[in-house]
Amino acid sequence: MSKEFRGLRGNSEILRKRQQQEIEKNIIGKMENVVESSRRYILNLYREGKHPGDHELESEINRHLMQEYPNLVYNDRMHIACQIKNELTGYGPLQNLIDDPDITDIVVINEDRVLYEKHNLLQIADIRFHSASHLMLFIERLCYLGKSKIDESNPKVSLTLPGGYRVAITIPPLCEKPNIAIRKFTYVNNIDELIKNKTFSQKAAQFLKLCIPGRRNMVFCGPMGSGKTTMIAVLGYELDPMELPVLVEEVRECPLEHPNLRIFVARPPNIEGKGEIKFDQLLKHSLQSRGTRILVAEVRDRSVYYMLQAMAMGQDGSIGTLHADNAQDAAHVRVPMMLAQAPETANMKPDGLNRIIGAALHIIVQMDRTPDGKRVCSQISEVLKSDGEPPEVRDIFVRKNGDLIPTGYIPQRALEGMGKYGIKVPEYLFY
Image: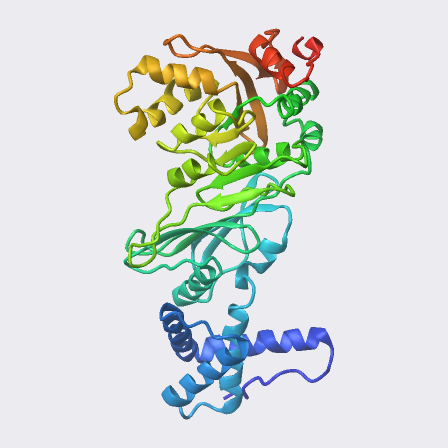
């Protein structure tokens, strides 16, 4: 029988890392049941609301092992405690993916399969979790960091980690195996950077920049992952430092920065079903918060009523995001459908809904992803006022043959509205 590996001699960092790797490999191979038992023990502590620090964690594991495996030697107990502590430090097996600034999304399919998106391409990661219980322990830690709770009675959560990462977690019985989706929000400093990578053309970008001091109400539309929320942060750099922007989110994700920014985030109910603060309640509250602009990321339901109220009733220059296939779909289908769900519009006829939309919305910007995964603006359109019919939507810029080009349409409503704030828009932008 071969002698058990106890490490390599020497003091170099390489030797120390090799020693730790060989020790962990030996532990997993020869004492898998013991390690799994320790993970389950710590997992139960987490579920009981106990989150011991590093020193307490090692002590808890050591105490558990002494009770359950009294014949286990001291060194093995310490190595197991150290291994599990390392699994709970930072982001465990995902740490290198988290640290890579070019990685935007990480998807854990199960304990054996992890994918990530880098440079718009989805790739398989050469990492795995030791077991299903290791993955569940990692999930419990994420929920602890995100101040959320997950169990069989509440098997899905959306949370935001301290680093600003947005996380969606699902566990059985809603799915066969626990899985995680992590979105890392990376964004450029300003819209000029988006000209360089051809997300916007020079003319289209200049028009959008002028829409901020010109206080045009804008909605960014598009599929998931197309950059809608990022655009709020990008245009945030054009805001005057003395403004009072209010950002309203269902889940904390938008990386907007501003010295006077206030952020309102909806809160799900606790494990007892209490304490919920709904998104539409926050939006309604934001109207009374002395904001100069209301920024909404993103609206999905009847709460659109309060976003449109902000746009039409004093917070000119507000911005929202929503899912839609194009500008016409947004103005004629998505927004009316959500608006009709609001209690305030329960008895309102379609012509009344159309008038609200036409009065509140000024500009719709469609964001998309190309077949190779690149995020681009595909359409910038003006919404005209309505007399009861669906508001007319006129394209100002459209993407053709890979370029975002002007259509030749002069957005008179926008020019007149921006002129009231002293903003003059050169007409050459539209030719």
